[in-house]
Length: 210
Image 1 (cartoon, rainbow, N blue to C red):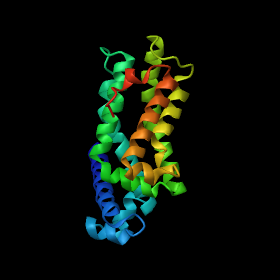
Image 2: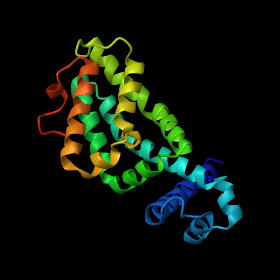
Image 3: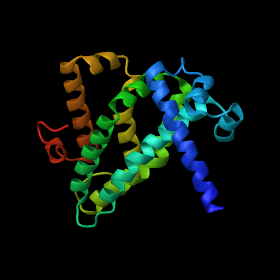
Image 4: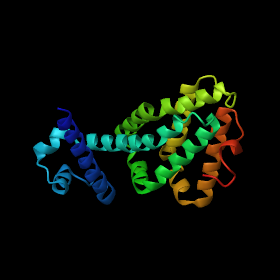
């Protein structure tokens, strides 16, 4: 039974990765279920065994992206030898590193997140996978008198939304393509996060840090 379940999820993951490549190459709207079937070698019935729609494939892809990132971050969160500030710095560094590794897909996601459906699924996945782990770091920081925060979980939620809501900005294209605007936005975001936590921004990021 377990072997059957593992095979099912393995095939589902493989199908998602195939669709993800097509979304990047052709664009989400231009990619049809038929394109996915052709690339994967599945029949239509085989596809519907795993997904009910193309939108569901996209939701799974977003969920997988976050899940893979979170696995890399768990070792930081569970490290008892580090204080909260050290964990937060590594958390942010690792998150940036993981995002850069999938920069092409991240840019693609930023374009399609204009859709209400995608945005909703994205924020649901974000809350499910990232808020509680980040809240654990903030809670530790409060116990260690490093962070001045009353409500760690809610603060984590606000911080993550601030970090991930860039595609909804009216100036998104400018921030993406203009280096000065990008750097100004990045510096401002870092300052906001530091103020939320009640620390100096240089305690989290070096002057030239990302």
